[in-house]
Length: 158
Image 1 (tube, rainbow, N blue to C red):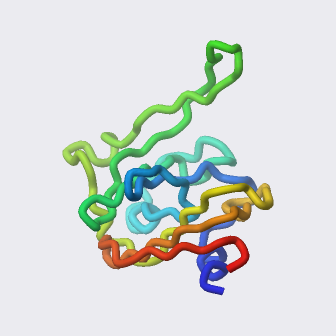
Image 2: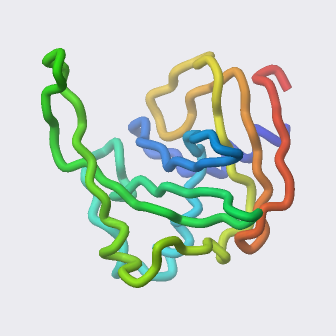
């Protein structure tokens, strides 16, 4: 039940979304939550423009837990496509972080209190809506005013 409540609280746009990213214990995970959103809700004039229906918030936040604190370390957005060496089309991304935080190498996300949902493992069910796809495992990180409290791990069946 704990896991389902967290997923329901996540924004659920109609199109599947590019997730924010977080590095936790040296591993990068996708996030099923958007810890930068409270900042843009309080500062709507700073919100990046929507770039596609797959990125309604206009950015992908890159976060990291450093010394038990949640930090924003980058913000990126897609700017087009290119062909890789095999001729496959790939999305090109650029950093927009310094536009929003020009004097800071990293920003402590001290306004965020809640659960960060990190899905990982096998994709159990793809759902083309927001963060509704289901994965075999989840890490849940409890954050209070930007400080990491604890993590819990759940399997899909939990």
